[in-house]
Image 1 (cartoon, rainbow, N blue to C red):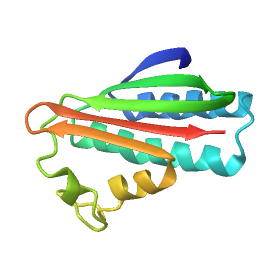
Image 2 (cartoon, rainbow, N blue to C red):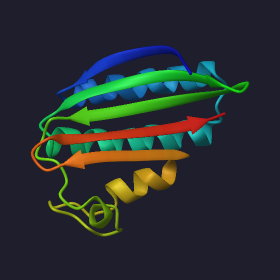
Image 3 (cartoon, helix red, strand yellow):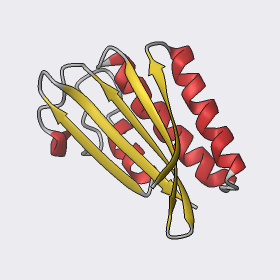
Image 4 (cartoon, rainbow, N blue to C red):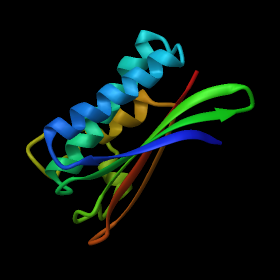
Length: 133
């Protein structure tokens, strides 16, 4: 269950920096380890940059969660870009439609505990990433 949430724009690199800083501050408040903070902030950087570069920007929904006496942080990054035609292929290491190395999506998925992606060509992409303490 979400106990607090915040929606932030993701249209510029500065917006992405604010999302990362906000999540890091929440994680410090909830006493997440430095390793878990680093992993989620890195995943946000990868997915956020994809939203900026390929999706033309979008938004980030940040949620503090409480479920069965454990706390979590969920970040949902959404864009209205061209979408991903083949999600399974896009999640494979070294697959890239741009000039990148192709480890952004697959790497972000490995860095978080729960990862959910929804995308359709012409309708944008929504990625939810959750970590639990």
